[in-house]
Length: 322
Ligand SMILES: [Zn+2]
Image (cartoon, rainbow, N blue to C red):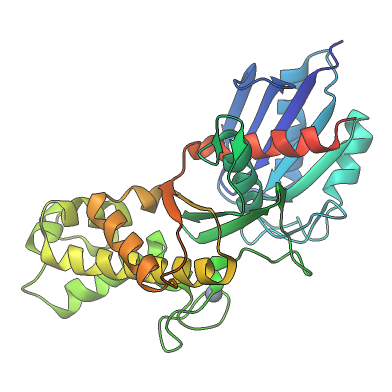
């Protein structure tokens, strides 16, 4: 039996991860990830994660457990509100269930919030012994998520909805968003939005986008944000126009948030954030153009990648370990 162990659990939409480290350590003692089958449900997630955790722990008991969940969470009560992708998670008392099963303190929060805390405690927000705060974390992939760390803690807001930069509006007449409104940052800047916009432009401009067309073999259904980025970096003008517009939309949203919050550091991660130097420059320029000039802020790439929610979960676990 060991008492200095901390367990991190990350319930993602397409994969489940569990990792183990010791208090004060900066490397994993063990980490396991499993991809979820299509059309799985909450029951599958719960059973699989429990098995992963027990496999990692063996006969050991952790001091505490931190949990990152891919969906809205009432962090104060450790209650999952729902998952937008996986049925059956509605109103799940995840903290209480895990506390009962493992007999140790548990802390649960939303994945973007937890990733923000991970970057703050263990990633690019931590320089030597100094932590940069307030920190705004933004992730751009299939959606656009965000998290805020203020005074060393996740800022959840009154309804546990703080940090939702993806649903700040930058064009009220823009594309329809999954939230039902128009022109949200997510609707203009996420990976699927980039692919959708490229598809529309290729359809509307039969003579444009020669390099992008060649890359997808003429199959518009094969379009992804990654291929648009590759083509843009290869000089394709149509792909550049699409990617630049997405970078501007994200930068606009980040600039709005910077002006509201005056953070010390903005950390940008997620697959789309790696779309290349041109994308990054356009995004940063748009952010600065939408920020009051008196505000000095660094916008930097995320350091922890896929591990950010797990490290944030470790920080949550440290927070509740006695
Ligand atoms: Zn929205």
